Image 1 (tube, rainbow, N blue to C red):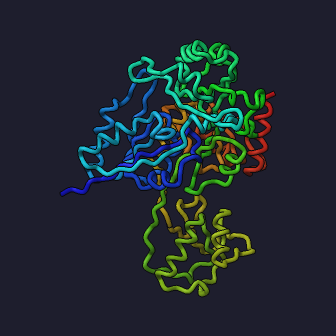
Image 2: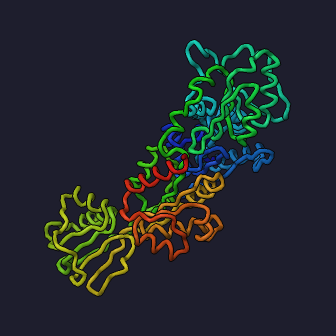
Image 3: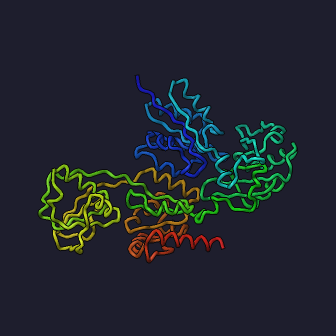
Length: 482
């Protein structure tokens, strides 16, 4: 009898990728198949294993890409094949997430499943707008309400809702906001009751519009607010009126940065920018595969050894161990081309040579890509093969569709290749892409490579470092807001 698979219904949270639970992250990393919704932050797909199959079940307003019945069938089909399936849903799967229907569809087939809660948008978005849904002496009750249902008709008991609950959170209610506000006022809610509409809550493109039951409809029309949005009604919505929330007041809030990657390491700068509120995506994610060890090597013929990457350092020492060779017998000078390579050598107790690299001396170079400047005295060993994860392309497409890319950062000349690949995935030339965004290069070599590929450069950092980039972005942000 064929083993049944397993289905994990996982809440992805309201948007901010950092709000994913530890348990949810574990399931994503091990999944064979992931069926994900439109409101799931595409950056979460970067946690998938390389061969994971991604199925987009996105539902756009008035246009369902995959019918609910088809989603149920896919869950049964993949699980019946013995696969680990993750059904990834925005917010919490138990709050307007149809998890009950989907779980019920598995039961006739005796397919085991679990449900992993997530932070629901009705709580997460208001908190990122600076509003707790309960507040002592202001709000002691809270209700979540859907702004639309499957039939398009309302089944809400407006009398009970208007008079029995302090704080109301309406999900996806922008289109019916006129009907919502009118019914609340007809059934006794004050026209002066504070209201907040939070669009794209917890993401870098979050927008908050404040008004009252009598004014909010006109205000969101003027601001052109649309779904996805949470509408918060109640006295708590007036807390801190006129103040910008802790989230939206971050120095780099609403700054969307794509950093081109040339290695599988996350850059120090990415985390530095995130801590200041920037929305950062590193493209692409790389998969490394170790090369096989040569069965023998004559180290006495080598005067210099140069490591191109930190991974090359680890590979080299594993190679020596396989050869049962003592590092102390190697008399060559040691060099490293990267900061991470230097740190990896230091952890092994190896110091770099104080002498300058001599291109005419017999040398061994270890890394992923053979350097351009080599001669007959150089031997190159490829320690790792590098391959981009296909998931990164789907993430890139979604971020582009959601207009969450506005600055391209090119840290080195090698990373230009990544952006050329990204432009191709978007159906754009480098010229077209850079006409829509700002392109920032680290130094002259990066600029030259980017221009050769067809990118138009907005700015080049003459002192290329993440700190200098951060300062430049902060200055740009100040100029945008003044």
